[in-house]
Every structure is written in C-alpha cells, then in structure tokens.
Image (tube, rainbow, N blue to C red; front, top):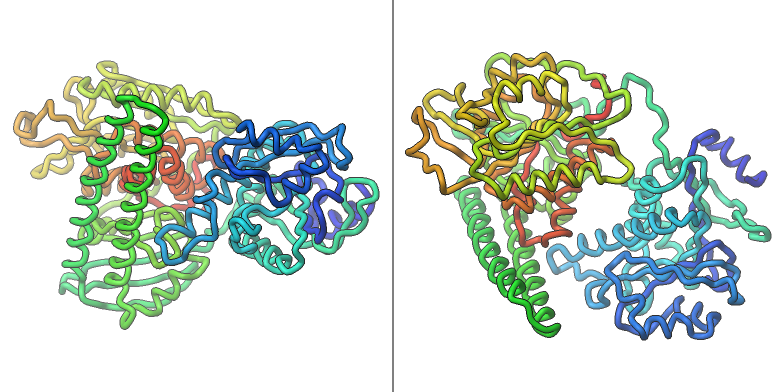
Length: 636
C-alpha cells in the first residue's frame, strides 16, 4: 500500500477492513496503460474490433486468429484468458469478455417493452462474470474499457457503467479473497463519454448497487509510475459489523383494502410517517380482465413451449436447432410484451392519476424499491407483483412482500438465535402422498444442489414419501429450522378451515394449530404446491379437497401462528421451475440476503434458465416483510 492510499483509507474510515475495492477512471488508451490484466470484449462470430483490435496489433494478430477459429464464441459473460508476457504490452494477461450475440446487445429501444431491463441485466451479468473470473485466478489489478458503448452497440455510457459496476461489485463480494485490495481501472479513449461514465458510477452509488463505494479524489495506482488519477472511488467489499440494534430499512407500505361500503381504500406510508390516503372506485372489471388475460397467456405460452420442446427432443441438424431457438425467442418476446402491457394497464387502473397522483409519485421514489403491500382477502388476488409503472415489472425490480389484515389473535414471532456457524438450516419434505414422483425427483435435485453451492453452508434434513409422517415432521420442526420447504399437496376444508393444512403420509394433515404449538416456528415456510389427476376432489375423505395452492385462510393461520415469512404460488408450477426457484432463493438466503431480495433474484435466475415465457417465476409471492433476513438475529 502506498502512502497516498494509506492516507485515503485513514480519511475515509475504511482502514482495517479485510477486503477493499478501488475504482479509477482514466482518459486515455488501454494499450498505453499498465496492469496485471487488460480486458477487451468480443461479439461471437464477428471480427475483433475497437479496443480488442488495438490490443490485437500488439499480439501479432493472435486475437484475430483465435476469434476466426471460434475460440471466443461463448455465452454472454464468458471470459477467455490469453497470455501476453511476450507482447510489448505492459500486462501479463489479456482477458477477452464475450458480450453474446451482437443483435441482442445494442442501445435499447425504450419503446420496446423490457428492452432496457434486458440490457441492464446483460451488463450486470458480464460485470459479475468478469469479476469472478479474475478473482478466481488471483488477478487483482485489472484495466478495462467500458463495454457496449462503442460504435457497434452505442449503449449510453451512464447506463453501461451503472449496471456493469453493479455486477462487478457483486462478483468481487462473492469471490474476492480476504485481506486483498482489488483495483479496476476503466480506460476511456473518448473524452466526451467521461461525464456519462461518472454519472453511471454516481447512479450505482445512489441506488445502493455497490455498497459503501465513495469518491476519494485523485490517487495513485498499484503499479510503479502510474501517477495520479483524477477520478477514484473506494469501498468495502465486506459488510462492516453493524450494531445489534438496527433500524428498519427505508421502504414504502402500500395499503389496498376494499371497504365494506365497496370503496377502494389506497394508502401510502413511508418509513415512519403516513403520507396519503385516498378512496376510489374499485376497478373490478380491469382486475378480472387482467387475471383472465394472464391465465390465457400462461396457457398459450405453455402450449407453444411444449411444442417447441417436443420438436427439440426429436433432434435434427444445426439449421433446425437454430429455427427452434428462434421460435423460442419469439415466444419469449411475445409473452414479455403481453405481460408488460398487462402490468402497465393494471397499474393505471389501480392508481388513477386523477385520484392517486401522490401515491404514484411515491411509488417512483427510491424508497419504493422495498415495498410492503397491506392487503385483505379481496385485494390479495390481484397480481400486484406484475404491475409495471414504466420502470419494469415490480416482481423483477423491487423487493416485495405482502401483509394480510389478520383478524383474531396473532402470535408474535419469537426471537430466533442464529446458527453459530452461520448455516442456513432447511427442513425439506417432498411427496408425502407418494403420487408425485416427478416432484420427489426434483426435490432430490434441490437437495444435491444445495450441498454443492460454493461459498455457503446449508444444513438440510429431508423426508420423502412414506417416511413423511406427522410425528417425524413435528419432531424435526422442534429442532428450530430456518426454512420449512414443503413440496406436495395442500388440503382445504371450506367448512372447517382450521382442519386445512399440508397433507402428509398416511392421510395426516399438518395444520396451522400444530405450528402454533412449536416453541420456535420456522422463519420461512416455502410451499411448492402440486396438482395431480390421481386424486379427484370427490374422493378426498371428510369433504375437503386437495389443492396446489394453500388457501388464503391457511396462509393467514400460519402467519398468526408465528411464521414470519411464507412463500407460495398463485397457480400450479412445473417441477423443474419449482426446483430452479427454490435453489436460487436458498442460495441467496444462505449468503445473507433478505427474503424479498432472494425471491427477486430467484425469479431472474429462473427466467435466465428457462426463459421469460415460462411464467412459473411469476407465480411465487412472499407474505412477510421483504427486508427480513434468516441469518441475522431478530432485533427490530
């Protein structure tokens, strides 16, 4: 550490933090810099261009030759390391970063639904991949150009910088080694773009996408002879230990209740103060239309994807595979357009600009990134998570949770001590009735995937099939698990709601009253419900019926019994999608993320794996405060 960095660390209060990140912005030419690693980008199937072409001239055309052989034709975010020790460049390694298909990585058309969000996620993805790849091979001094802002893609520099930086920061948090400082020097040859780049960094800081990163003014670099750089930022990659007593994060609480008079009551409450309450006409026709359109879209998309999957399984040559991939992409685009239009229409119907202008303004603020919905039995059926105010679907852009208006006694969730080893403890129960072999197979895949997750520690106890008797499950629940994951049937008895619950082996039902008897109920109940044609409703004993969704009354009972968070589905989901959501969600929870953020990221991971049109990701909702974390003491 040089003297200037020592001074900056002392002045910014970052001294003694195990891992640090230093970002520098330089106006100049990458080939004239010095660093352990130079980063350039490449579009698969095209010739090297831009900064890659400039670097290639110093390698004797090595990058061009490798590109011509298809060496760099990987998916977006793939990183290829090329030795540069024998070149005149002042670096040891050249990292070639794949940007994916050129046609899909261009300046987004704001008129196309989801286009901006797609580019944001792509930038975050390549930033994350680059940081992880460099950290894994112990490269701590990286110089890179900005990606996507050249003559080819022409993405706005501020947009490109903000989301690339967000991904890079997260990648370093996950992969950086203790006690290290990681340097990223962004080299921009076009001086007219510098202001936009700095604006993007400021936007990432403002949005909380890069921890406590803060400007520190000019500073020297890690290499001898670097000189002073006028623009630099520094931050902690590790979270500073917080005091035991914490404050609630800034958030908004949106109330939407149907009064006895038939009026629609909307309220918005910020952190600590009531802002506005308005009354309006309940837009029942618009809500019914939206739900019907969503059901039709799911059905049509499912049928189209099934036909494509059947055609893919039949095999064929490369041309046929490309044709089917194009069809799948078109279905994805069509469904995205329909869902976005649905979300925007419903948003305008629920929040009439003439009546709820103040609420609309508050929903557009930074506080609304954490949104808690206060609902009743009438408004809980609205697909709130699919609303879109023009900035993206709420489910994919915000940490959301639901809160039900509960009548009767409510048990205060007990304080939960954190596992001394920081482990996420999961009790997994699957296929108790024995008629769901596919979901049992997927649940076993969840079990294997959780144990294989890098960088996290998860303890799982699992019960499958006939071994899922009530006495065993209750005994396990008394061992204080953080998560109770149930994959099976719900049982609903409309005449005796208290008898409703989760169906176990031998006809046993785990009811909310039994959960009430637990000294410490699980902090999260994750319900992956499934339907089967094997047991029609009229064959279920006692007048009840099996269901793939837990009725609202049963969810209310679980929350009254002290369950702090409940994640469930609004319609049946396929087993593969259910596993994708669960694995991604638990991975984020084990890393310390809040339940709301974990579910948001799980939706995005599922879209990445299965496609947007596979609308299972949209079925999942959270009942509970989205800022709750499972690996922290409850101290609010």
